[in-house]
Length: 50
Image 1: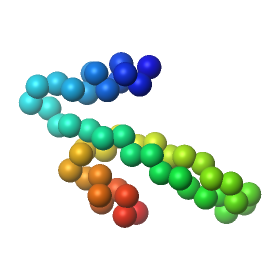
Image 2: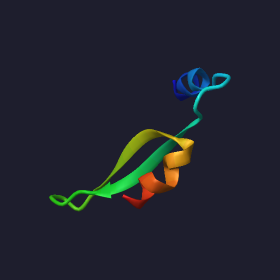
Image 3: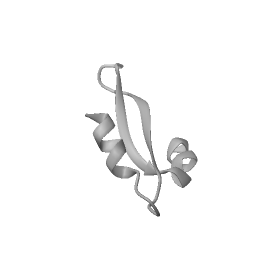
Image 4: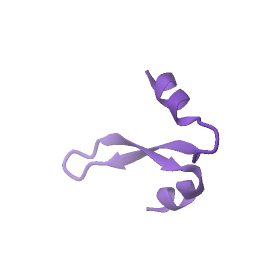
């Protein structure tokens, strides 16, 4: 299913996107969950700094 999503985002003249996956620690349980975001490739570093 991910291949289909990535294939539709690759269009001529469009903005290229990157999938950012971050591990987020829960305050209640201490367990890690993963948060996925699709961001423009120019904003990847700024997204990871959050």
